[in-house]
Length: 199
Image (cartoon, rainbow, N blue to C red; front, side, top):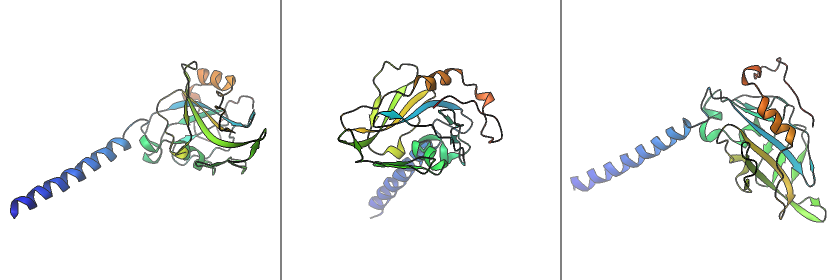
């Protein structure tokens, strides 16, 4: 009687330990508190680009300075590791992204199914490597709020397009600015001047 109980206890404790270790590893994986990454992004609807997010609020460390870049430097675990996501960026400025809609900093809500040249639009996120833009992007259509930032110098297009259309790359000026941005010159202090690009 004692032996089966001991085996069961070992299995239960082992499972709990594995789960704790996995959660701890994800919480401490990159980007970590103190990292400072930059990625370009753009928003594309039907057949044209939209203005960049200009409202800067940042409780946890993922934001934009109205410059067409994502500044990813977690202040705490809520924006680090597996929690460094597009959903965190959108929620920081009061917006939202899910699998069928997004809400911009202007309050405008874009919803799947709207017409684009006679076809209904769907929401997609394209992830590019800013250092190899010739490589085909990863196209994501599910769990969009959970799209993670995986490394420095990515590029994203958040797009409402017909199902058979792939999102285009972010505008070239976004990528150019990504090449010249100086992390030491950009802070999350809203009183600090932030460089801007067109659009």
